[in-house]
Each structure stands twice: as structure tokens, then as C-alpha cells.
Length: 125
Length: 108
Image (tube, rainbow over all chains, first blue to last red; front, side, top):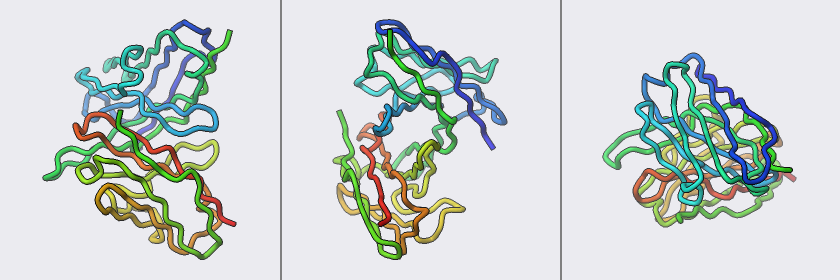
């Protein structure tokens, strides 16, 4: 059973950079799959932030693309999120997840099968 | 940017059938996935590839697809099904993942 655990500061000041790390257990990131960050503002819905493959290729949601970097450190079996120039609107529970996939004549299709418990990050001075 | 549209809320009495819809222009081309999220918990997938049910998910959960709309159906709703439900799919490129806004299912 794949396990994921987020870590990082729970409070970030406006205009600064939010940095989180996801540690993966019982599965080697280098073995494959995309790995994702997803956030959920308090009382609101889920928002996919982006995904990274073990090789380093990334995809980001268009609305955050200019402020986000997702990176992977396979030697530590971790991947990370950096979101710069944060505002109060970035306050959310941030979760990491494994993006599994299915493949058929329609092509690849991704879904999130293992999730971390999530960590609340508040943006406030 | 691509969006998936869900009704904010659905209410049903125990034993009745709940239907939650999700609409998006790329759904004829991209599979949809449904997640159940209870307060303070991580989402759990209840339907994958439009209509497949993962192992361990009760048979009362089913999914269907028609054109630009996919539907999650919960037959014989139980109190424990009260939760938020999210659809997830991708844009036409398949590389940008999107969640619907979520539907709060209330069991009266």
C-alpha cells in the first residue's frame, strides 16, 4: 500500500513562497507513475495544481502555471511543491497523491488512487 | 480554461436513488472518475473510467456517460453515503486534470 505524507510550514506570509514536500513510502517514485499536488481551500472544492513524472516532466493547471514549480528527488523518494507570490487565496489544505493511469484505444487517462492526509497552509501576516 | 460542472447539492431520503451529474465539453473524449470525500478525510474513488467500480466499493454505486454529461448514481442511499462527491477528468489534450466543483449529498 503506497503511503504519502506532506510536510512543510503551516503558515506563510503574503508575497512569500509556499514550499511543501511529499514523502512516499512503500513504492519507489523511480518505478513510474505521475505524482500530483492537489489543494482544497477551506469549505471549497478540490483543485489539481500539477503533476510530475519521475523523469521530471511536469504539467500544471493553467491558472497557477506562472507561480508553481513541482520537482522530484528520486534519491529521497520525495517530490516537492513551490508556489510563489502567495496571497490569502492560496490558503488551503494541500495534498499529494499518486496519479495512476489507464490506457486503451482512447489513450491515457489519469486518476488519483493514493492520497496523503493533507496539510493546512495558511497565508497570513 | 476547462471546467466540469456539478450541482452544488443533492438531497435524498434513505433508500431512494441519488443522481449526481457532471458536465464538460471534453467528456465524450475523456474518461471521468468519481470521488467520495467525507469531512476531514482524503477522497476515495468510487467510480473509474465512467462506469467501472473499484473493488471494495458497494454495488449501489454506479456510473454512466452520455455525450457531455456523466452521472454518478447511488441506489438505495444509506446514511453513510452522506458526503461530498467530485468528478475528475481531463481536457481534450489529456494533460490538464480538472475536478468538478463538488456536490454535497445530504441524506434526509
